Image (cartoon, rainbow, N blue to C red; front, side, top):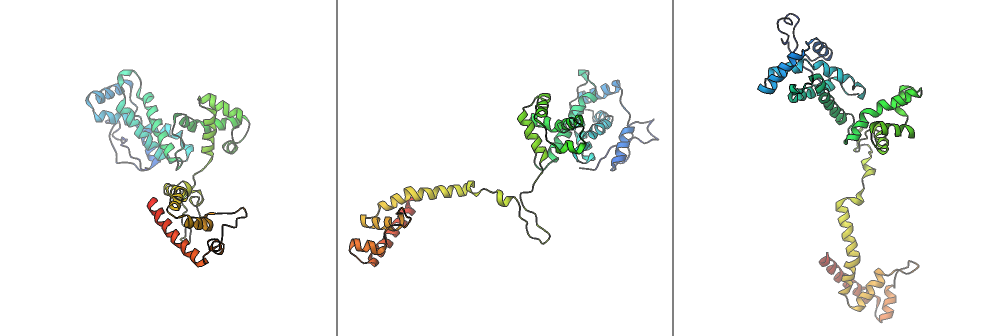
Length: 314
């Protein structure tokens, strides 16, 4: 949103018709020069046009009110040049605020449009800066917005009083006394001051890696910031595994006869103090007076029964 357009009076027709128009202008310097040549309205003219707009929805009167205050938008937008956003965009957003002010202006309140419009112009510019200064929005609450637009200047003032240069003012953190001073002056909590200072001192970081010159994706924070343990599907699967390994195993063992259950427990579920596990096939074979192969066959059959019981439980 960098192209600017305004209808301006020509020098030849200015006296005869102050609102004569020229083709749209796209150059910022030419735009600023043009709006500064637009005639100002007297109180009587402003009241007349505002009443026509309010009573008859006269769009021509609305246009005259807007044109005569475009220089106000340019002046206010200059105050926000330090945020690194295009001046043309700031002016364009301010013009939107001016149009909203003209639409809502009531001449019967006895206030000049310039005083009323300043709030709307600043509000629209503020909203644009907050949305576009960083990729991640820094200020959402009223206190955060207040801090966002005042903390930088107050911080520079503290450093200037201490004799530090501008660069040091932006880099250094606030002292405890300065934090208390900011909180008191802006009527916010000191914790909010600390949080906003940390937010403004940081920067945006792309979570997804961008491809490098070789076309391969670089390593990005998303690779080590992802927490798979709290991913919904993984949590459901983990919960299901826990159920199967506790209640499910208990129910599966219940379908076995005593000998089969003893063999499975000794072979797979028992752990001795020395982590050596339970009895071997040969030890179980000697106990039951059968061959080791027979113990293995009983174990295989028991595992099949347990698997069927676990599937039914799941």
